[in-house]
Length: 386
Image (cartoon, rainbow, N blue to C red; front, top):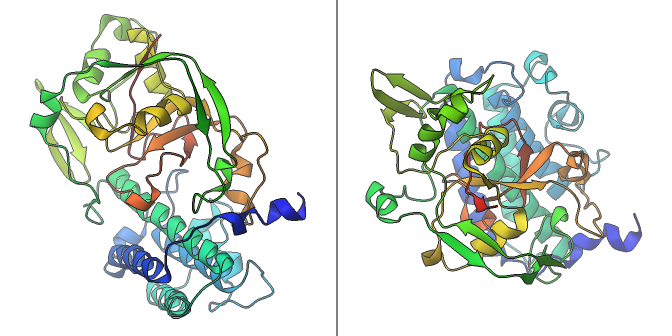
């Protein structure tokens, strides 16, 4: 990587004023501390499975990440506020399975570490900052936003109470029922994918803006609903398969009634609500049954750039048919492990955002990505005509 490419992150401007960054940091760290400050000893333990992390490790990691990039310039030679932090909390070095067996600092020590690191950044933000500091502070805030959302889907997986209030209001049943699905036609067009210099903070997988010739397509105005998905599960086509798609893990049937779990509450299944916690693999099987397809990331981006009155948000991350891959001319930013290691063909792009995603991350150009079998995050989908 050339020197000019390695400094791309200095081009991500304009930045929000320091007062805005200070507010964002206060907001996201308040959520983190709210989740962890009163966590019981029992809730500090989670099963050792690949979709979870021990909560204390997660707190240590997001704090270490912030300190490492904002205050240590990404250099291990610069000392941490916490002994052995580089060994304990670097997710690129600490193997996932070792996060359960490696002794961790106490919750009190981790909260104190967090307090010192975040306080140091708030001190920085009381004076003018340059592009470099603004970039790394935003990177740390957005990274923490993602981990706060990860706490939400970890608590959902575990059936625990909601860890923090959602950022968006739940869409009412009446609004969902009032809007029938129709197909929005987009004629053949040339669109811009990715992000331009001068558009503010971006992640490296958005580099750089380039033209895409997009054939005409028809996309659903509304997401696939619980009712749609239940009909699919009970359809002769699905039931005739050698391995039929089964109900999502947060659904259960009691007599003739279907229930769905939202954190620790079992509620009657709202057939009009967007179906959630569906893997990309099962979404594809739904599409095959209905002779439709998932949109690619550019089609979904074009839809999401339209005025909201023309289409209905699912308040979920929505799967696309696009494999997570670099755009032409990609180069990694200083946090090399954000995108580059995951261009292995096993991750799919998602667009949008969930109830637990702050608005600052809900940019049309933002590319989320998960492996196709994952369904623990707040994900759903909509369809396109073949």
